[in-house]
Image: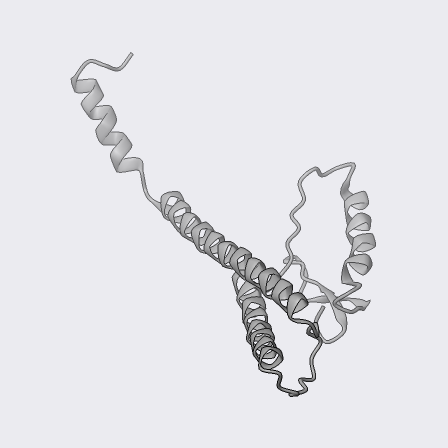
Length: 159
């Protein structure tokens, strides 16, 4: 969804096709009937379909969530310190009000942050693998194969 509208990008069309109004919450419900119509239209004659969604990088999404959780972690730690010192400091937040609940929240936040760091690392590893795969896919192996065949022929190892 862009500016409250759902668009289809078809490489065979001159430009984007507006499919109607939508929100970030309901765009999947809006797009499913359109995809289904397209599949049904070509189902008899075509078995290959490509469907892609343009989304934000997962790594960026994870990093943004880590920032929010770390901010919440600091707020929870500050609130625990205030409760322990008997300060009557009122923080306007949605954090628990008891030290026990705040400690549970800190544990939960720590676990989630670690999980997100693992996901960020996984995304980095995935991108490195993709880079290597793309290099291999684009490499010209013909000279290597020709030389290998010449060598095997010289050694009388070809059938």
